[in-house]
Length: 107
Image 1 (tube, helix red, strand yellow):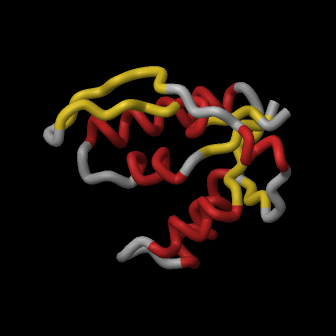
Image 2: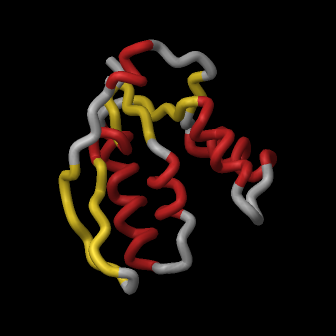
């Protein structure tokens, strides 16, 4: 199985808050145990557009972790319905984790 990963997962992974980073890392490792990891082209674009992140950093991270970039998106990806799976608490309040959008099995 291949799992597509949303931008928010990487934002959480690279967050300064250790609990957020640990949760994202655990989720990515669990997804990796089930198969390949992939990001859609818009995720790549969002990640390199963030202040302080370069294309080289994102490319190197994906190469080092074996995460592929899907440069072509099909209809199935755009029609996926996101549903909240878990609510976590942080300093800003409750944040819903949109699991189906964040980790979308592609095959």
